[in-house]
Image (cartoon, rainbow, N blue to C red):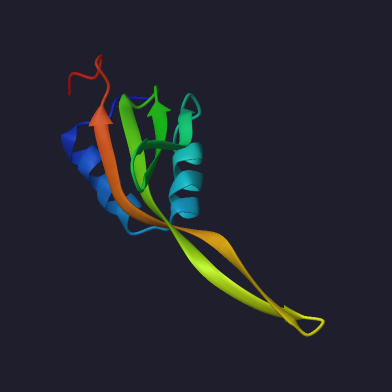
Length: 104
């Protein structure tokens, strides 16, 4: 499989940024059989979570950046109200970069 050139990387970026996180993750897993997930929801900055895919067969590195916020859920069971927080992730940004050996 040939490495992605600048236009193909831009096309992949535009395709992924319109997807939800799970759909983008599934697309990246299927797109390259030699690819792997480098890290999953790594907290490198405050309030942002990073997931990185290394697509070795395509010569690209894709980073999905999410924001973590808490959703408040209230439930009433047996006459007592309880409140709990459920994490809610929203995809903020997609970064597609060439690897060092990709010269296109």
